[in-house]
Image (cartoon, rainbow, N blue to C red):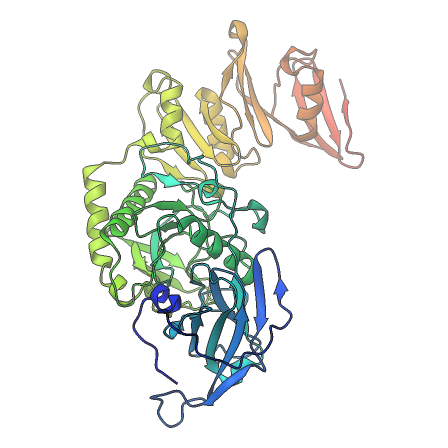
Length: 528
């Protein structure tokens, strides 16, 4: 068998033209298919077997299987039970063309199933033959996965504008949101960026970029079993920056890009294979821009260090529970047993750190790209809240906050950005901020007409204050009963106590009476 060549993956898979080499290809077997993804069994399709060319004594026997493929634009290989094969390669022969070169595939990281990275081929057309070479011991349970990314439903809707780089939305690459298996998961903050490559040849055209991303998305969700695309952001060779995993590019969304260290890291993947070629200048510039923007949001140093705790699994270098210190901008191979982002790509890591540092120095962190700073400007800035008393910080469930002399602004992706001010802020702080039973604010602190008082609504309760009195918290079923009567305009008036324990339930005192909740019946009644 010929040994793998150093060609790029796209070139190797394209075929060089000329006559088709005759192969004894079995008729296509039944293909398991799910929404543009087909799995074709490789077992029983052996064409040649023995020891790979150039192998030394003791190397495992290999087998080559061939499958006819009609259509599709992306390929991968999955494996059955047992140890993952050390080496897998494939090549494509299009109808009427000579075989392409053999291409070594890399194993995917931290996936629920054992599989290779996907490889973009461009449209295979009808009657293509895909040969897969792998150890004979792994061939029986192996499948060739063929992905048709589909036309998608692309729109021109960009992400919300800000001071950050132009990031093209999931809608712009045509994400089929029905393929997502779960809602986004958020870390408390972002502590590091992990740089990847997609291990693809990178010979795609600019027009093909959305289809390549759609293909990766289908492979990640339907073949690897991930909840969404693994990377937070992908960057093409033309310098385009694309939203990857859903949940908000400005939020600490947990990806599936660095086994063991997905939580608290931001995964940026360069679209290409940088084993023997360098990323384009446009790619490096875009990667630096998006990391600098992300670091500005979270107050990180381009040349700093990050402290994380490994969750183990996948190709992680550390067992679960191990404290880990890494560079704030690290390559995938720094945290996992993988060649990613390629040998040449890895040599650009110091260059990337320098670019990010220069961008951060030239553009000090301002809040124009931040929902909190936009809210600050919207409500009148220092005129309402006074001067900031500290930088923005990370809050619970992917939220953010900033404190000012006379109030605080809280942001949480699910509920928006809101102001808590005056004595309401002091009460909220005493309860434990967003960690308290109230959760995040869902509306700004609001003054009632005529200076009667003020209120702030939260996810799980409200703070009300009569002018000249202390603020009090009303929660749960008692708040529901009070609100149904008309809040402070009802005969109950303002609360004069926080909710407290009573035999058999909870109670709150109001100016015009007490409301008591019965834990056994779930009902609320007036006591006096």
